[in-house]
Length: 117
Image 1: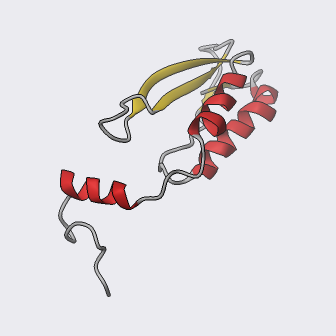
Image 2: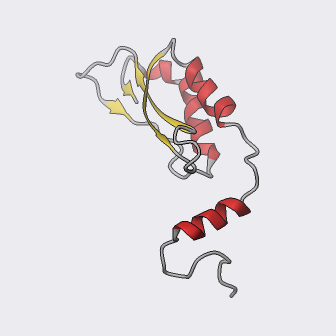
Image 3: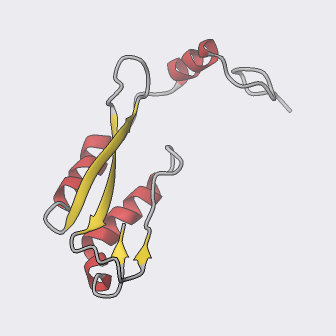
């Protein structure tokens, strides 16, 4: 089995390894602004949306990927809460898109019973 061409097996990547990997990755083919941020912005009328941080891709842009949490507008401490997550692994877009689709099309159907975050 051929080892991965960057770094050493069992050893955390160094800054040099990370730079080598970033240089080898193609330019992103998806737009975070269009496919995530714009969809979150569209939810602002239905939900409370808060930004809680950002993921820097590299030193050139520490705010490249803003992070958001979306809450039921009428949060009620007496109701059970449901957590919908997406984006745990950065390369897996289906979780983010599924969570956003649920919020846009179905979440309001459950807000009488649950708080949604």
